[in-house]
Image (cartoon, rainbow, N blue to C red; front, side, top):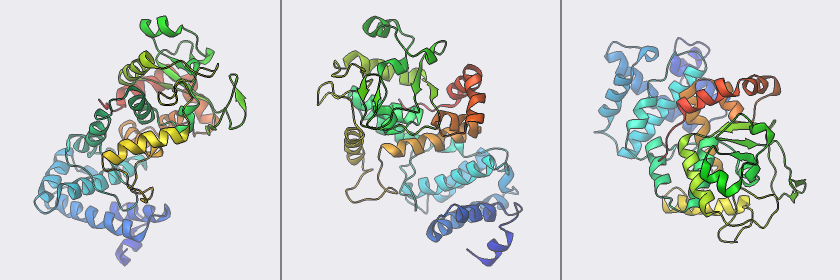
Amino acid sequence: MSEAVKEDATSTEDPVAYFIQDLTYHGKTERTRNSYERVLRDFEAFVHSRGTELATATQRECMAWVHSIRSDHAPSTVASYASYLHRFYAYMTQAGVFDQNPMTLVLEEMDESIDTDPERREIMLPEMRAFVTDITHPLDRAIVVTLLKTGMRVGELCNLDLRDLRLADDDVAEAYGTTHRGSLDGRPDSVYVASKPSRGEATNGETRNESNKRKRSTVVPLDSELKRVLKRWLAVRPGSRSPAEPLFCSTREWGRRLTTGMVGQIVTGHAEAHGWYRAGGGAEENVTPHYFRHFFTTHLRDRIGDRGVVKYLRGDVASDVIDTYTHDWGGKVRETYEANVYSLL
């Protein structure tokens, strides 16, 4: 990073320097910082040439910049550079330096496939939609969409029982009854993600092989899209081997509760077919079940702008904050989630 950037990094008068300095604090490599700085300075020069500042740039100016670089770069590079700008604006908005992220809608409308980020692969929403659309198996699609729409960990998904799900649907009620956790009373179309169980301990009459890592149990709303996907899965779900009645059980090892290894194999197979997984590739390159939690966090946080709601949904927020959202689950959490969650199908 240049000396000028270092001198200005303590002030928001130079937003790019501010952002690059924070990347340093977050442990990003020099290669990553240089990549971001090069792209952001180019965009900064572009908006200055149009008489605008970074803080007041509009969606149309962002679109114009993306269009201006298409003639000099491959589509995947254009998509990568757009993702850098999106992340810059998302971070500055969350830090309270900027008022809005003009890149949010721009990314949704772009159809370029994205290349590998210096630190982690960045996938835009249209490309993730294409990935999900290609998954036709009811179980596989239910797994992927649940992870993408809820941000839960793969172990938490494997530990879900039928009692943890409440769908307001007559067909589901007729097939499975209406028994659900008391925590879901008054909260239709939602899933309960517990802070427990733990590996080796019995929960709901079954010793578990996976552990949940939530600081506190969370009720996550389900939008109409995920509800349809789960209903389709429940229509073909095999009878369970366990009295705990796992929500997700194998169709290959008939009726066995899914394990993190099983889910990993399912996701890896689809990611490999899509060019998102390479044997020997690292976490920055390969798409695994954990990547979906990253995708959920990044995209939903950019849309909502309320980090507290996203932290609540992820289950990794302190008790004093989570109590606020639990108390106003219907008003704050569900309404905010449904108004901002992305569509995948």
